[in-house]
Length: 143
Image (cartoon, rainbow, N blue to C red; front, side, top):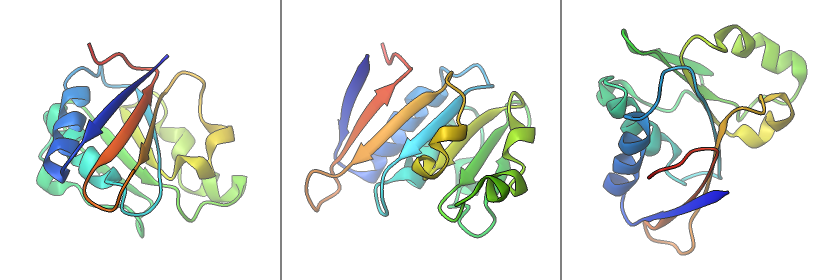
């Protein structure tokens, strides 16, 4: 069953990420779905803060493919935008990270067939052209 959460600013998006991050054990996979400008990186900044990781370190991993963050709890932040094939996915080292920390993948629609069944899916949409975002969260209970 999915939960729907609406945010109205980047700060509220970060707060949602923090709320989720504070409840993670440390080995979850979070698959983010949504186009450009949906607030994926803002959400990950909040998630990092909830995990006790300095959120100032968080930026989009577009050109690096993966950014590693954290000491006590690890966060591996992937950008799968340019991943088109299984060879591309293997070259990111994605499978080596499984079970070693929280994995967040932006552009998960590009690797959906490779994602484990046990994961948290978050679909982000923008119903209008302001900062409002709608988060459809599956595989995680907010309450």
